Length: 165
Image 1 (cartoon, rainbow, N blue to C red):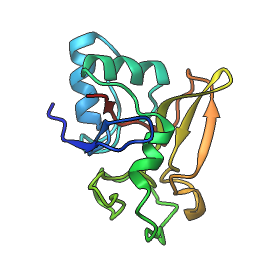
Image 2: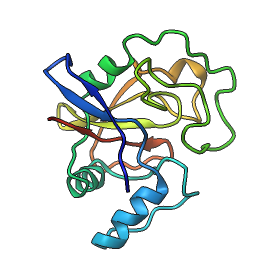
Image 3: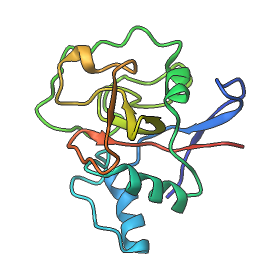
Image 4: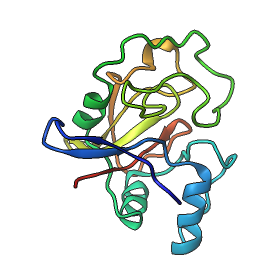
């Protein structure tokens, strides 16, 4: 597994890096094989979904990273206002990188394909951001926010990695 990082020297809480791509089924399968976690379902290039926040945290630790905060996700998206999702909702989860939902800095699929688990908390729940493939277009935006129990799994709930230098 190779992670391409997008660096932010002026982040909301200091410098950080965000993985350019979502964690895919192929990425997670490598982790599952190495650690004994359950194998993911889906095509290799699809974003991995149906992963709890705890499983996403375990993957991040295994990869030497962490989950991003919701403020870091918002910061990466800050200069991109022109994305439209005319095709949403989609009939199925597409492979990562198929739609022009990149940030100005090159982070791919920050919104529209899967909701992103974050490390941010809302009460006893964990916040996820970004909208998913099966919702109407108005939900496919970084500002979409949901808080739920960390043990929750969803067909449009995935994640990407972050790190602090």
